[in-house]
Image 1 (tube, one colour):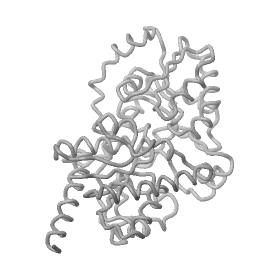
Image 2 (cartoon, helix red, strand yellow; image 1 turned 60 degrees about the vertical axis):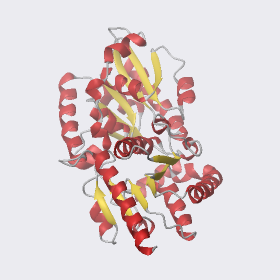
Image 3 (tube, helix red, strand yellow; image 1 turned 30 degrees about the vertical axis):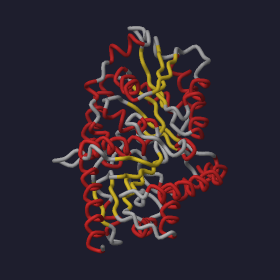
Length: 389
């Protein structure tokens, strides 16, 4: 079985890697192709090109990269035609993916197409649901309320849950991590996650650094750990290389989760990382902002009560959000101090744990259910072709 993945950002890389593992368990001789990131590479995956080229978010942020993005779409279409996989699995990154799928449709490429992670049509651009139905054969969603948004347009849709609930965080050896990096035993560890895209790192690091300056006057023995990804590691190291606060930059999934487990709390760019922090029982807050023009458009067109998935699922702000105009160093620092309170932290951990349980089916793990759907689609297509032949 040949499976072609198209992922455009680290969150998709994480989802695809979990699916790859489940597929390998089911089909030992499966072959993977396409585009992916560092977690997928750990399974021997070779990406067609560097995924970091696609890792950009926001209308005005995308414009400078548009020529390169279009070039990569053309390259991906050609690669799919060459490999002729049994199925194409596109993961998140709907802006890139939708353009790719339109090209495939125009070229009459009839390989089964499965999209993983529903575009958030319930938040904005509801008309996208109908367009999704025209471009893919099946959709797998992370949230239980999402299938109904697409099924009314005739698209077969499955809630599979989020594989972050499968994280085996209890196996993380925190003591070995602390010893390996010579972290003082009396350190009050705070994790900072400024994002995985170059554009967001440039915007968020100055704000997060100012928050740390405030916190350093209030928290004794403050020690900051910045888990990051290969796409932005050099930029992150350079940004945190100066200053009086001890800082450690780490990469890799094991180091990432060890940092989460060892910290008192975390300040993070809004996104999938919040679910990872929740799975590790780490109290945290999320923040995000775009450039001035995109912020303005987001204020007008994005009409949702919450941005964080756990908050959305529970319909209450469990994870504090500092979005757009609220993304300010002083506000972030004040809330971070609150989260260092033991009672506040324990309450958040309890509520986030309850929220995470809504991201899974009762009788099967998310990655296993997703793998079952992939196999089902391929077998159905093979049987159809045999009938035609």
